[in-house]
Image 1 (cartoon, rainbow, N blue to C red):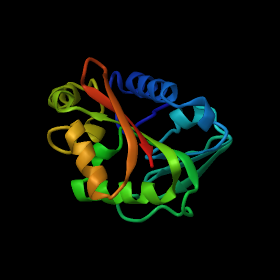
Image 2 (image 1 turned 90 degrees about the horizontal axis):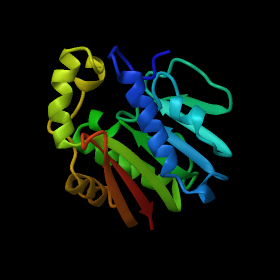
Image 3 (image 1 turned 60 degrees about the horizontal axis):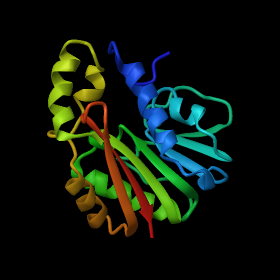
Image 4 (image 1 turned 30 degrees about the vertical axis):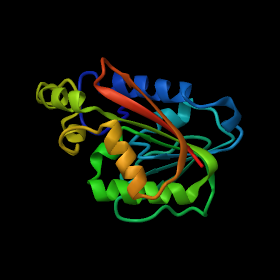
Length: 194
């Protein structure tokens, strides 16, 4: 079973690690609500493993179904989210935003702001600048997916970049916490909306 596009010796292992990390960042009080995973992938590993009252996933190349997960095939870079305002308690973007141009990242955050409850939570994982430099040679060697890495923004995403995207999307937030994982090659962001 492939969790992401393309081949890569450790691609599935890394996908499982990211899913486990993000699940640990979710406060228990939100699990009785609704979650939206943007870019849930060719197999909804994270959504399948996490516990929520209602689970939704969107992806442009969605090709499978799983029990108790509501899917929509959507290219978020080209269209808005087909959900009402304030529909979700949590929105996740696991290894997704690095595949968009900067202006599309801002548009995606505007849509997230619209569909997220006040005081809802956004969880994001993305390569750091350090990690992005290492991913290209790893992809060339077949260690990670060439298909995934070739779409990345040049240079990785910094905390300052993340703040700029949120500011440009006019998404007001109470707190933004962040951390590094996988030897500092990736970052997570936990953003609490006002």
